[in-house]
Length: 214
Image (cartoon, rainbow, N blue to C red; front, side, top):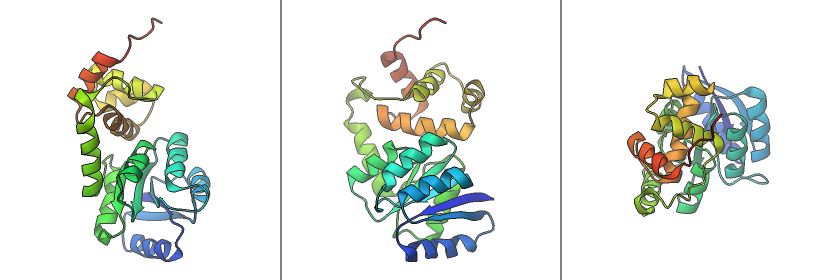
């Protein structure tokens, strides 16, 4: 069973998603949150596999909640489910750690498939979100001035990609799950403006400083 947490400030939306999950045999609802702070708290206590995250919520918004959830547990896959399709919100959500971006006008089956894809390590993106991401990648001159800001863990993953290690071996080397490796790579590819492992390895060799000895 895929454990799902829903975060949305509209009771009608939460109720509709709850009913939708109830029609499946492989998805289990483990929590309902009405705002970002509640989503972060519930994610910590119920340990969902996937969070369906609204963006516009009172108090802590969906971007901040996504950042807090993914920072606390890299195994949680956050899929944004929102009515907003503007460039700034899309990029902010993906940069915060979301692995998927789906619009609320999507068909019910598309929402369910997005949850399953995210749990399987994929990045379900609405075509508008995919276009925004592609445009940003194309807008980076040659993948980079080298100014991409990567976390220490993302740098570790990128170095191992440059060494030619597969995701399974990277996960074993770093003591994390393979799905977490995939999530890190999604973020890395977005930040440095590449689309595959070969480009990422070349970028790493050109831009990452040598590792300190010992």
